[in-house]
Length: 369
Ligand code: 9MR
Image 1 (tube, rainbow, N blue to C red):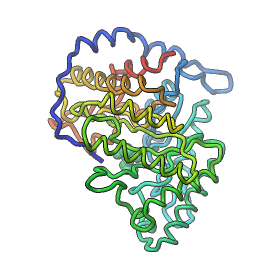
Image 2: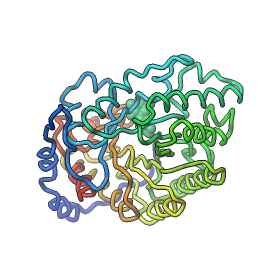
Image 3: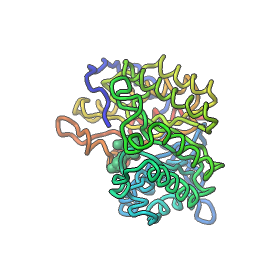
Image 4: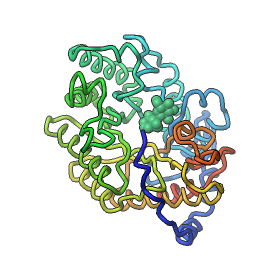
């Protein structure tokens, strides 16, 4: 996925952000101080917040990097699998499920008294070859239902919220859409979304059911179209009496693309009027075009996060806020959009030595009670 990279970087004034930053000085220390051991091995929630703060954790790092893993316990209220619940890793062969990695992370969260999150049942990518080879509507429909049922049943009562569908709106809804091309679209059309939500409502009656997507917060015609298509999709489900509880706003931010304060705020309010809440699910900053100097880059990233959270929180409080990873040590951005001058990317709240950055302070300020 990528956004429209053509927008010239908006000029930032750092005076404003420095003032705001000083308000939250010491927030990192308070979080650490709150992470005290409780009898029985479980730990107290890191710090009291208005809404849960979470992060996605990749299994390879979960098993190989103890310090990184501890960072999640010390700072997060929600810990969830980044990739282990994706179809290609979970059901590599028909009916053969490998729950071990996802179980590892979900039970790690449970052991520490943390919440979790389910990402994701239906996506256009990360599908195993045997699914990609399906060529009839009847088989596609049954396979989709079986997958949702099996995974939801396995985690029944343990995963309180599911991304039922991920990224079903076309990247450019006006020219390519409105729905994204996928195996599911080709064989079933938009009804595959209805099928997924119906199966999820039946198999996970107590879980929150969500649509997760990207590029919902920026200024420009393509983003307006993406917001409209998402609202249309919500209405479509509601017209069919299907339960849709929340939108996951991924929040992969590009500092060169301005936040549409008004239009994004309107979108959140329109969702609320439809009875649908929202979460921030994959926050990070794609810093590939930012200056090479790390502290300048961190300040700019923090300021952009501030702009985004200001637009979001002033429209309505999200149900949770999660980042896509937690430390610059590991991020998808290094693979997909490396810094154009060869610097190591700095997209996340903690640096690669696991020290909090200005972005962390900004996020915590929005979450403070
Ligand atoms: O960060 C994830 C990366 O490790 C995986 O290889 C990739 C494919 O499964 O997915 C990345 O996560 C994506 C998420 O599932 C959906 N929104 C965009 C994320 C970044 O590409």
